[in-house]
Image 1 (spheres, rainbow, N blue to C red):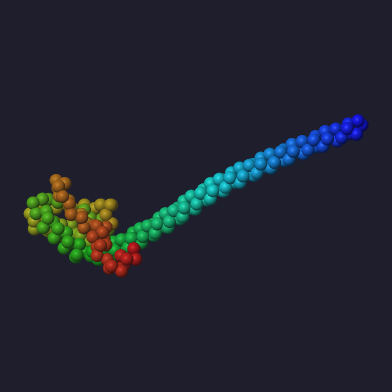
Image 2 (image 1 turned 60 degrees about the horizontal axis):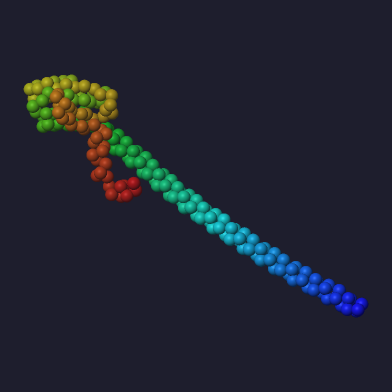
Length: 195
């Protein structure tokens, strides 16, 4: 009987060890499965974060490229505008230098006698050009047309002249600025291409 008890104890021990081994294997399997699930979840989260970061980087890159293109366009437009302004200034200075007293008087006479026949216009001239057109010339022109002509200086004009109808119904602008604007479209094509 003692052998039987010993066999029974050994059998119970073996069954217990086997059961414990199976439980341990189950716990290990579950732990491995959970670890794999955690690793898989972490990898998926890492991929989401990386993907989001890549998208953000691409958006920032495109934004930076667009800002760079805009800055280049702005710089180009600013340069073009400064060249155009300088060119207009040069044309204006050339026109102003070309308007000597004889030419200025002849232009005023042409404008007044052709466009203001039935009016007593006011001729606005720059302070600088006042000496180029004498009061005697204006009086002579007024007598010739049998109308009153008023000569005034204007600080807004840097050269040339403007003739205005007495009732404000019309004007003729041959200021150096306006003449420069009129001449600008006739610049050479090669110069326009530069702009």
